[in-house]
Length: 141
Figure 1 (cartoon, one colour):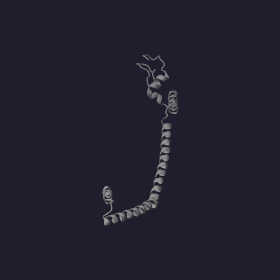
Figure 2 (figure 1 turned 90 degrees about the vertical axis):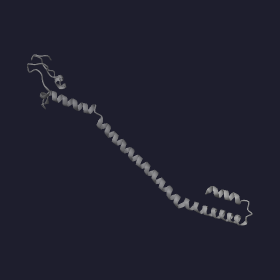
Figure 3 (figure 1 turned 180 degrees about the horizontal axis):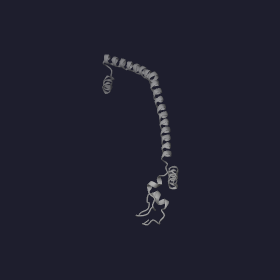
Figure 4 (figure 1 turned 60 degrees about the vertical axis):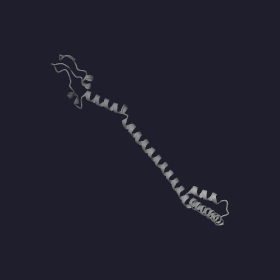
């Protein structure tokens, strides 16, 4: 668009911001004249924006899917961690109620037997196991 007032402006140029160029004449539309709500160019631009947002703008869909995935992941992770904690609680309870008392009784019985044998050997002084017992006791101290 180069000058005189005889040229007819093209709607696409006006919509993209490249209105009439040169001086004189009222042939070129400006950006401000497209702002009216009833103009065809304004309606086309509005429709193009809506089409773009529906077809090409996947942000809201992706955000929704991401939120759903994170929510499901957190729920499954929480359930898995709850199961692990419940299993640990059961193991600790079983250990405290059954395993530790049994181990304690067995240890007391065996230690009493060892102590009796040690004292009998120590008092007799004829026991050949005495040096071995002393070395074993020193290893555990």
